[in-house]
Structures are given as C-alpha cells and as structure tokens.
Length: 226
Image (tube, rainbow, N blue to C red; front, side):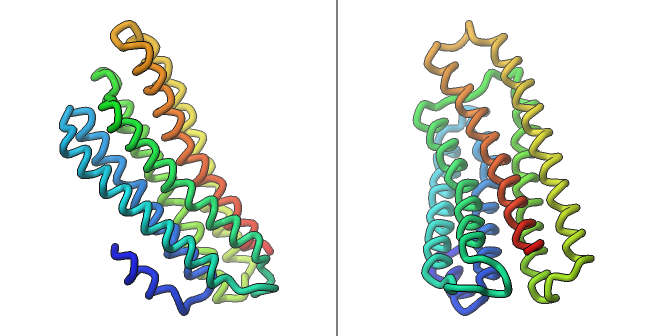
C-alpha cells in the first residue's frame, strides 16, 4: 500500500470511511506477524528482517492515515457521533500496528526465537491474534455501513454480535498466552536469563494486540449505539 494513494482514497470521505481505511492498514501490518515468526523460528533472520522492514513500512502507512484522520475530522456533531469517540477509536486502532512493530523489532534486535517445542502453540497463538484483529476490522466496517442506514436497530445488533466474537477471541488469546508462558517456564534453563525475560515480554506484547482489537470493537460498538 502506497501512503499517497491510500490517503487519496479517503481524503474526501466521511470520518468513518477514513477510520475504516486506517484500521485495514493496521490489520495488514498485524498480519505480517505470521510470516515474521515463521522466519524467526526457522532461524532465517535475513528473511525475518525483510518482513520486519515491511511491518515498519505498514506501521508508517497507518501513522500517515491516522494523521490524515485527525486533520480532516469534522468539528462539532457529525451524525450524532462525538468527535472524541472517533479520535479515541483511531488511537486504539493505531496501537495494534504499534505493538506489531514493537514485537518484530524486539525479536529481530536480539534474534529471539522461542524454543522449538513451543512452535506449534506459538503459531496458533499468532493466528488467533491475527483473526481477532480481522474481526475488529469487520466491526469498524459494519459501523461505517451502519452510518449509511441511519443506524438501524437490526444493524446495531449485528455489530454487537461481531463485537462479542472479538471478545471471545481475545479471551482465547489470553488462555493461549497463559499456556505458552507455562511451557516457556519449562525451558528457562536452556535460555539466558535476559532472553527468557524478553521472550515473556514478547508473549505479553503480542497479547496486547488482541487487547487493542477488543477495545477497537467496543469503541466502534459505542459509536454504533450513539
């Protein structure tokens, strides 16, 4: 995604159209974690670096879109949606890309990989995080569509259902993280103390992406109910 073309697509759109474009850019960034950890776990650090560079690029696109949203956000009342809620939503969306960049940067900077016995569980954990973010995008997109139909009650219920699905995946990711932490503990003696600390931090930061996705879904639901 080119920064200029991405911005040009939404520059004349509604606030929710701009927010939808932004959350999609954040989700594209998060989705790169799958390829990143495949390379990292294989010890292919040059490939991991290429993915990390792409993550940084996509996070930059999201930042540019965020600034565009803030610059073009109408002041006052817009379709009964508060400007503060919309700005809060874009901030929450942006944290998903920020955490993704932090995760890849920390892993690559120390060439950190998880012990091989954790790879299968790690892969499932990453997939759950990516799926959670994708569902949050659906909630934001549904909220934008809802704005075109004057926020009808049937559509609001559909958004609530999607938001609950995000919550379920976020809780699932919490459970998966707890199990990964337990498994990692069994391998601490194989790791340097510093690497062990950073691996636990990686698991936590990856989980924060799902936490942010849940917050995005909740905020979008509030907007839909307003």
